[in-house]
Image (cartoon, rainbow, N blue to C red; front, side, top):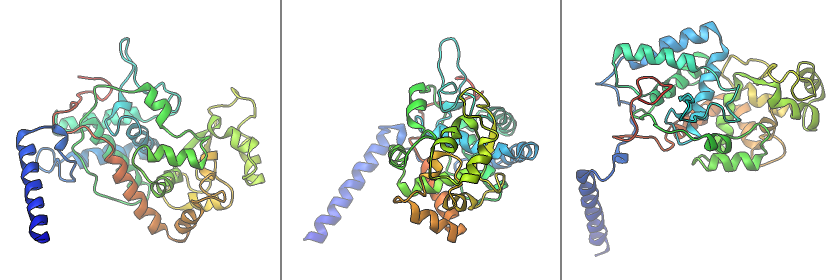
Length: 326
């Protein structure tokens, strides 16, 4: 009897699901998939890769910048390309929010990719999907892992200045704040530690690491002095001076970032918090022991992050220009 009842429940739930789908109750029922453009725009991958590769060849830092664009986009309203929207006289975007102002970069590369993709298949591929593929390609080009990117996102017609200010973890974050901000996006502490490994590439501004190198005690003394030499203590002086997030290889995607943390050479306060006698120490150590474990968890985290509240179906739009609403 129990088996028949269970089967009946499954059947009835399946019928209800079919009815909901048939009624088209919500375009959100559409799902992201790795084969989304297999028929409508099979050339999208080559177009994105060629422009991304050329941009990184011109400036290797650009790979980290594109990856960071994806992070900062997905943490605000989900992965919807809201970050790419310019301010207008009647519209406030996210670019001037504190975590982004004077910091996020690479918008012109996304513009170039959009132009290349539009030549291949006009009006088909969203800016949100372009950014997700470019982020993956940036990781691969710099030596990191590859993965199949789920696609089918559409572009937002809105942005959230307040969301950008409140949702993106600041470099002053402690472990608890980091964990809670990632949890708010449906990402676990394990995902957070793995995704923080994105800091194995790229540079940071003095204004983001000044407090750590002058005030914190959980930092190697010689390393702190080296960073102080190009980052004056006084705020407003040398704010935009740059230092590598990964001391050894800021243009190669590998696990040196975690090795630096164990040596108390994390550039940002938030970096060093991952190895500071807390609950994430063991995970950091595991990534030092196994780069493949880091790569596997990073891929898992990137896929999960790419799934944050995408616009699908008839929601949103396919922008003609990534910087403005159609």
